[in-house]
Structures are given as structure tokens and as C-alpha cells.
Length: 216
Image 1 (tube, one colour):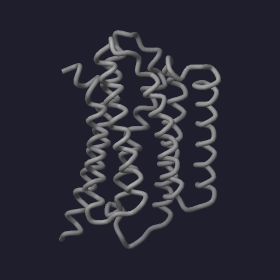
Image 2: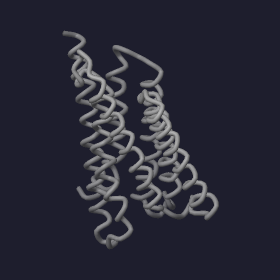
Image 3: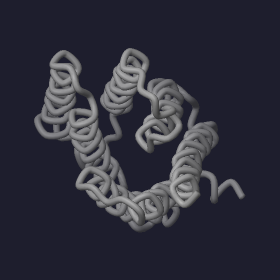
């Protein structure tokens, strides 16, 4: 059971995200949802490969796959929130956060040669904190722009709520990950994967709820 939580719950969670997007785009397709669906398909493949490398320790190191994944994540979600947020300040915040994350990637992963062999938890923590910032900007936008349509009738609400649940919880886990003893790292990683699965299931619930609402 421990192996499932540590190695296979993470790719399963991204597969749940894929299912959620397939559900929501059945009724209404747009470029942004299709873009995110493509991201989650790639994320599932990357994380499944990384999990298999971790499970079969003789197969090699998986740090480079996670570094690719985190770069892909901050670029994809920055583009998503840049489209979602409406005010110039919010858009500028997203651009600035993306630039900071790209600079950190270039410095630590490329210039210092950590790309293949090192999982830099502080760089990942900045990535997660940036996305948490995006979610707060979104909720501020929702609160200050009240409409007749209930907030739960927007798929973005379910998706961003899931992001807040995961990235806020994972930020604290990742921030202190290297300070945890090796014997506890499997437990900590498994806890992060549980939070990820909960966020994915929340998004899937929202997609199913909205689909049923449209039918009724």
C-alpha cells in the first residue's frame, strides 16, 4: 500500500484531471480547456515515467523528468491565469512571476547544472507559491465582479479551488522536504500525493456537476 501512495497515486491524480477535462469539453470546447487537457495528458505521461523510474530504482534517476514537469507546469498555468485574469495589474503579476521562475530554472538547472541530478525543493516551492498567488488573484476577481450566475456554475471556480488546495498544501511540504529525514520522505511524498488526488477529484466533481446542470 505504501508503494501505491508514494509511486502511483501521483500519475493517477493527473489521469483524473484528464478525465475531468474530457468530461467538461464534451459539452463545450474552447482553446483554453483543450490547451489544459493537452498539458494534463503530457503531465500524466511524464509523472508515470518518473514514478516508474523511482519504483524500479535500477532504471536510473528521475530528477530531470520532474524538472521538465515543473517548468511545463509554471509555463502552462501562467498562460492559463494570464487568460483568466482581467486587470492589467493581475496580468503583470503573472508575467513577473513567470519571469522569476524561468530565471530560477536557468540559474539552478542550466547554469549550475542541476537539471539532471538535483531536485531543488526551493525552486519548486517558488513555483508553487506563484500559483497560489494566481489563485488568490482569481478569487479577488470573482469577489469584486459579482454576476447573476452562481460561482459554482463556473468550471474555472472548481479548477482554481483544486489548485489552491494542492499548491498551498504542497508548498509547505516541498519547502521543508530536504529537511526531513530520508526515512520520512516517502511518507511526506505520499501525503503530497493524497492532497493532489483530492484536488483532482474536486475538479472532476465540478466537471460532472456542471455537465449534469447543463442537461437539466
